Length: 383
Image 1 (cartoon, rainbow, N blue to C red):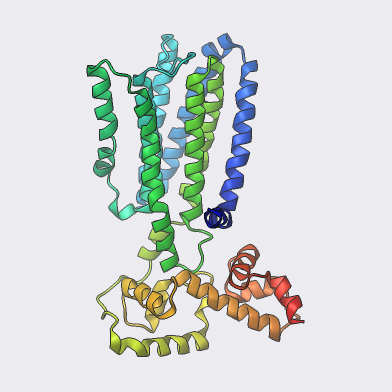
Image 2: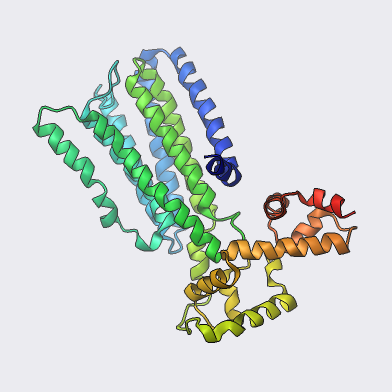
């Protein structure tokens, strides 16, 4: 248990802080929303928020389509934004007819509105699905995950049974399926890249935190007797959509980075005769020190080793007993130790850049993980 907590803290501390800050803001907003007069909220603020939300979605979709550049993630997110924006404009029209399908009360909402909310949860979880496994994602396969919800809806309609609890658990099942693949995705990143700062491993976790918080706000709204508390849900979802659109547009796609490198061709598979490859690789590393480049990738090893990416990854794991990411950063830490010992006049910032770390923060984090002391403590110890 302690090991699991330490792993989560070491790898996702910024996401934990982000979740705590957003939780505090949502709780404060929920209580402050009680100050909003109910009539003012129903007649003006709620439809105004829905209309603004729809504009945000359409504008975000336009930006994604304008900068599509054959990026499937941007295309998928644009479709999600357009669908959500269309729904918000429909809601504005419904407000004019005094009909609100999400009317709240003292009990959980009826099953039909809950099923609608589950469909939107499914839409929100499409983005992490395609980010983690873009080559295996398609809308048809994703639509199959709606089948359990459809079955629950049919049973709830035909039989006199209350399935609202099972319907409420549907988004949790979707979240579990996505979260199950995050570890595999992170492992894939470590097998191909030496720096994970600009890769979506942490961002996807942050996105899932936002989705979980939006679900908690929704279910709290179901139990609330104050419709004005929907104000919190509306502004928060606008924030989620805006923030995610910015990340989709400007955060590098690791899959795209691999596709932009040399196209893989058929190379021989490592075998017992390839033991000399390690000597060749070690000599190249000693001479060229390619790990000093923060963008050093697994594919770069093909300059000296005649293998495709799959066999390169297997070769590194077999010969060095770790992933490409941990292997390269071990080389960087060893180089940092040498520089600290031979050049005591160099600042730790200079050492960090010289060894290929993308930031001083990452340098300190990885150095401490490898040596159990910080670079500054190591430097003082050496003196």
